[in-house]
Image (cartoon, rainbow over all chains, first blue to last red; front, side, top):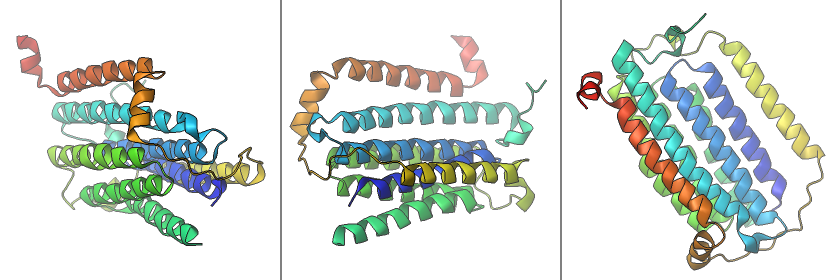
Length: 102
Length: 170
């Protein structure tokens, strides 16, 4: 195996995540799309760690671990915001969240 | 050969889960296909030799994030299959798909064309002890910052999701 197939899978995953984040109306699904994009970045990190010049330094792997932790924090705060907004306005529809529109 | 076969199967599993999350109508089905994607990625990490990251992926993403997403869907009553078809996609969804396909296309073209400076395939066995020593040695500052970030995120999520009347009481 070489590096390029992994990077292509990560690029496709990133594109699908971006598509979800841009096209769905539900706020929770937009968060799902963002999670998919973060996961694609993690796959890149792990693949570069495995096929890179110095895998014994574990740089990519530890970066992926920290990235997983940050993604978990982001998911919890994002879903908390969605729930707070739902309690406020009884909807999770992003097209109706237009109160701050100029 | 067998490695390529495993990689092909895992990438099909991962991308199919992601595509299902993009296209399904029922939100709970979307969350379940999202966890299929997470399983595929965790198995891919395991096949790449990053056992600890693969198992953390299962623990954090499937054990926590997917469950959290399902909870949020159920709490916001997005679970009913009553969403009319026109309410699935946002206003400019055609433009959104065009943009994401363009991004994927550009990324893949750039990847295929660029010579990647890799030194080849050396399988290094990384033990959990090594990871722990790295986390406590050179990576101790990022570890502490992540700990503070997680604490702040926990408190922030609780305060944001707290009902308004309880917020005013304290």
